[in-house]
Image (tube, one colour):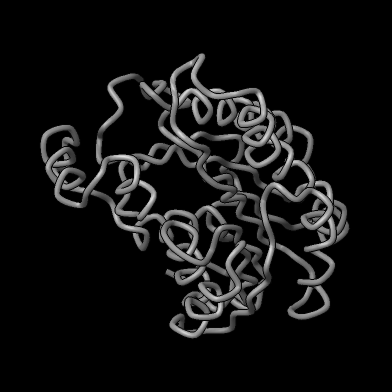
Length: 250
């Protein structure tokens, strides 16, 4: 299927590993020029070298709002104006509703809500001028069913969905789509860190996920690439589960 994103410029946050890397790889495969952003310059450069297609690494911390505000202009100078934005801005530490200190709540808000807000503010004016844009938020199934022990993620990812839903209605007439993917159990280092070992992650997926396995970053990238395509021009304001049937709610 021709997606119509060849030659477009994409900015993918958290692209040095896991879901972000999978998204960057698929967008590059489909012909987009991909700006890969992450905190670790070393991991970024290694990931960029392994991906086939046009990529460029940009060091950026999702909690550094000044850096995020300047990032799209740097990408534009290197690859062209950002036409596709993927906000994959990290996973805060685990903890119950009253476990994390206020400082961690503030850091999670900067990363998961304000970070995407700053990036959106930087790229939307150009998207409006060109009459075309795609914005995809890497969310979580916790926005439908909160996950025990992940209060920071549960709370702030819901706030991010509220931001993206509001934005989607404001820019739909400008040819810009805005969607969130409700991430299920995807094979990433983050999931292994939360669960303790790869063996426990695999076993839990076999027992809990109706599909009987973990999803892959590449499968995630395929969905995001479609959401960024010309074929998905009428799909906006959605929260789309990618979870192998894990969610029980409608």
